[in-house]
Length: 396
Image (cartoon, rainbow, N blue to C red; front, top):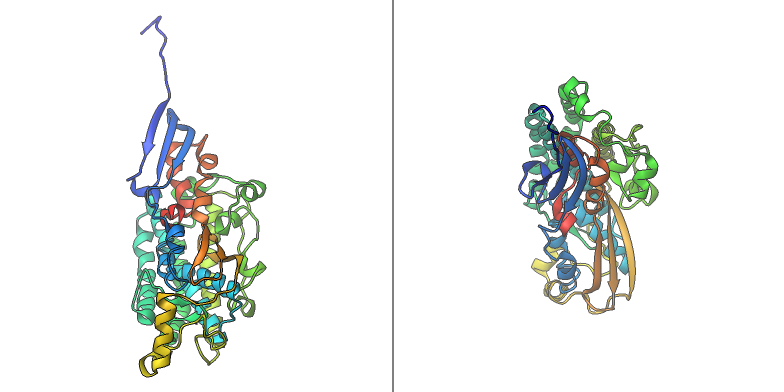
């Protein structure tokens, strides 16, 4: 080889769309110089189902099951976000008991989502044991969801003006037992990886985003708070019962993969704290508002016993409200992955004239080039996991 020059060239690698570490059907086209990522181009849309357009051809009630399929790991939170948006559009105030129940379900969803994230993120990086431990608690929560509404994943539990059905005392007792045991389980997760030297090498100083960059990219949720920005919709624009409970918003300092991991771990503790307060403060009363009968479904027991209530439910489900307030609204909630927003335009009919979603996963997927370019290819998987995306709501 003496006297001859060795020539090198960049390699283009297609990561996905079937790669198990991409948290859904995501494709990244990586231009590599050795093991260094020179350019990263995300390709989304493989899970596009036209949810926003489908909503325009359905009544306000019929849209609720569509929201289950957005971030299918966080169906309860999606239901609540949509119902809150429609209630604000129609000027409906749900009963206090329904607000507390929805807050409980949203925080159970946050814990369930973070547990799934923790197990898969650790598995992506190479730690298998925490995956097995975390799914033990997730199964406990899914059993409680099933006990409440009969479904574990796509629940369709929220209702405009409240919730589908009341929770039982047995449910509250089992959930309270969970809140007492769960902090110890979080410590078990942390014992496995929190100070593990391999985990620290794979997460510390990787995927650093400054606070200014995170804001400019439009990031929300733990992905934003890991960079030290304490923005949380539950604090700045409270909905349901969040203004009646105490909780803290965890933030990071360095904005790397490790800080975002720490934020989500602390968030699970705060969610556990919120659930416990809601159970202790749970008021009695109705679960569907009686103040807006034109827009809300009648209670199920009345539907089964009263002809007028049955007709009322039939009309609302098949045709929607006969006269809806005209106007437009943007309403957001703090979903497990970040700010989930619904922009709805009403033309006075029983169906939304337009509906658009602000899904955190779509925004977070756009920051992958910033995180990956200049780093090693092994860090790409860590960067995908740290932004906690689900392509169901990204592509919609």
